[in-house]
Image 1 (cartoon, rainbow, N blue to C red):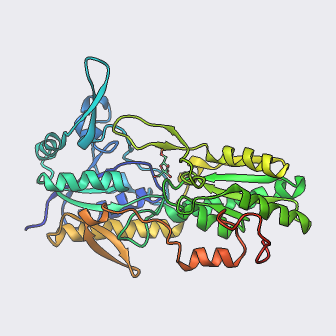
Image 2: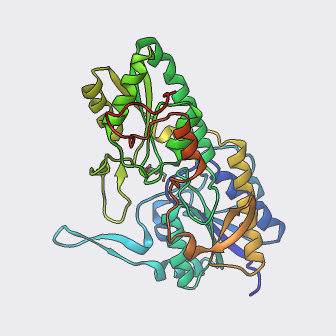
Image 3: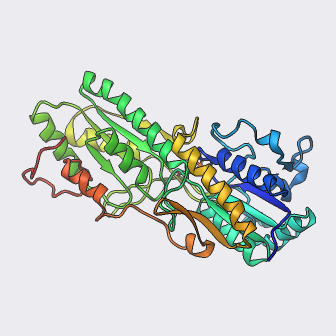
Length: 380
Ligand code: F6P
């Protein structure tokens, strides 16, 4: 297969720090090869609904000066969306109910109409699944893994995660001041969807006393025991990190919204944990939801570098005639993995991994310790 001469770049799903580094890297390395690069606005909306962009246009020619000075900026210069998934496009019926339709073939036709031979799709599981579908429908696609959640299988890292952990760690660090001054409990809710990577890494880095993650259903009586034991030693405050997807043993995830064709929106577990801990311990508990702060602002140098490596590797893959693949970090080298495999499984925190073991050795509670038992070790 010969190398393409006109390629497109699209960013979909939640923004993640480092997206602009990928866009810049892919654009510059494509231009160096004499290719043309088209940026699609807001996922695929710019192609599917150009009428929504009367002034700027639904697509943008990415030339050298358009991608100048963007690698250190958060967000995505192309815009993003997690609505209007083309493979499960929501359509309202005359009776008011909703159904979804697959608009993949129509979208592939639009790429062809724009003279675009290949797509670099930068996204998480949702956008990469769309990419996989477009590839099956005849478009050449290379995926670039993006998510602050770090939950994509087949890659050891996704850009955005490091920045999210850094911001969460600083946020938790700052709460120690008031927690110690007022002898309070602070419950810090962090993003991460169904994986506990952000909560685990930031919680450990910031020396939280309990970390509740989706992979370990929790019992708050165990956390309350830990708080009481700290209290008995004169440590009258505690910081509890809870990942938004965490749930009590035998309970449900806390969901705040669901729409047709979209992923469910998680949230609210932090305030529930805080009110339960108040009830169980009699101590004042406050909730801080870090939410989208974790996705905003300047990417760390690690995320920028990963974005630059991924973006250039995606172009090299197309040049080598590869498609239907995702660039991935494997043993600290960028490799290619089949797109279909990359989206087939979510990567969650391994419970037998050394990071969870380290947290347990430090005395951090996951809320799964035996309740009411004598402590087996010192809490931090
Ligand atoms: O996947 C990234 C993420 O930030 C998750 O951690 C979070 O659950 C979700 O996106 C929030 O998405 P939105 O900004 O659409 O509410």
